[in-house]
Image (cartoon, rainbow, N blue to C red):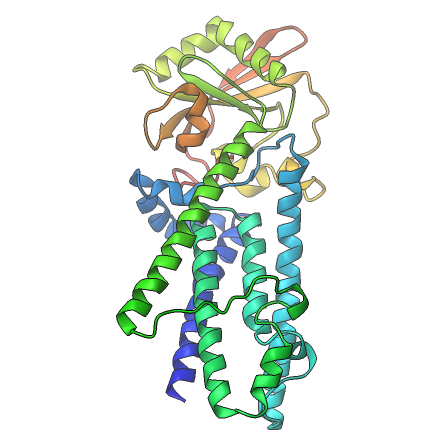
Amino acid sequence: MRTEKNNRRLLNLSWVPYIIIIFEMLYMATPFAAFFYSVYQFPLKYLNENAVTAWLIQTILPHFIETNSNFLHSLIDAGWIMMAIGSIVFIIGFIQIYYSKFAKKGAVTGGIYNIIRHPQYAAWIFFGFGMSLVWSRLIVWIMLVSMIFVYYLLARAEERECMEKYPETYPPYFNKTGMFLPRLFSFVSLNISLPKNNFLYGAAVLLIYFGAVGLTILFALTLRNYTISKMSTTHGKDYAAVSVTYIDPEITRKTVDIMLADSAAQSEMSKIFIDEKTKIFYVMPHSWVITELGMATQLNDRYNPQAGSLAHGNSEDTTPSKKRVLVSQAKLIMETEPTNILNYMKQQIPKLYVDIDLEDGKVIGVSKPPKSGIYSDIPVPML
């Protein structure tokens, strides 16, 4: 009984980080964003200040920048579907369990439990996979691995108890069902044999866990580099430029060249960047406002419920010949070449707007962004 209670406590604790992440996803799209981030900013800033931990809050997949990869964007769409399926399966399992308890019907082996032994764990893992695609901070990916690891150990412990408690009925049930997947899809057995000695057991568990985390980090960073490679970018001596909407990289280059050749824009930048500082230029449709880039003081500055997901709340671009460039100072995790600025950037500080007419090949306006955007200096996604 004590073991079962401990397992339940551990299960409840393992949900907490994902509930926090769900809140971050939701309140970034609500009027309460500034309020929530006033508290949430402290752990984010703490992680972002250290070069070792700053990697943890970087996003792997594109958040508001469009790429030319259908694969990347389909991954995010698949994430939403996985979260929905995980939620439904979890609710079904929850209803079955508690109906059985209240009706005093004994062990649950019918319905969804006739297919998999741990549908609630499986549902939360599936939900976690989806969330890791939709909200792809590196720390979320590591938490997913940790959650799978905890759930596997909990499931094994529960199964050992059931084997002892129901020696006649549980083994046949065990043999015909899968742990987290239907047995038909259980291509790889998860019944890992570990040493019986407590010390060796603990060492083996930790070794497997840290190995899985290491592989996850390696895969995540590789996928992040791939994501950036599929964006419309260009580079110069002390800057990187990226287009928020996907356009031909030559257009991104042309936009930046027009800006850098303009005397008024150069004059303003020379006042702002007195010392040699790394710059990041975000190229976007002239009318767009990207909240995460500090361009808005409230969410309704840009919110449009009719806009597509890739527009990130902005209306469709109806004047592609006019662009706005957000000139920002790029804070880096470590010094690097201009070609790697996006890979190593941990924060951007907006400094200047430069509006450009591509048809006429000239700058049509230079202005200042808000002194303090809705997210201020909070390290939100930058891709």
